Length: 64
Image 1: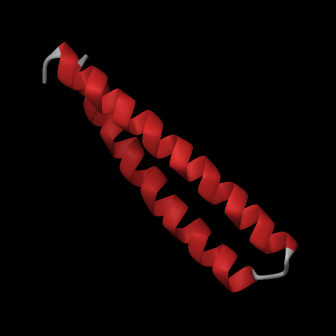
Image 2 (image 1 turned 90 degrees about the horizontal axis):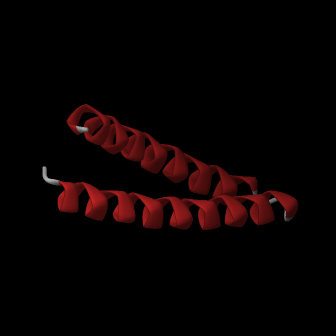
């Protein structure tokens, strides 16, 4: 992976994190509305996505 690919991957990760922030906000709203089942689903999906991002960050860290 060259520096441009790393930069592109970092840009993608930032976009993914921004999406996850919105998902967390949605979860918070669902919890406020006592819609715990949907909130739990959002939070589970968010957790999986964060784990995937952590793996990508680890890969980049090994390369730099």
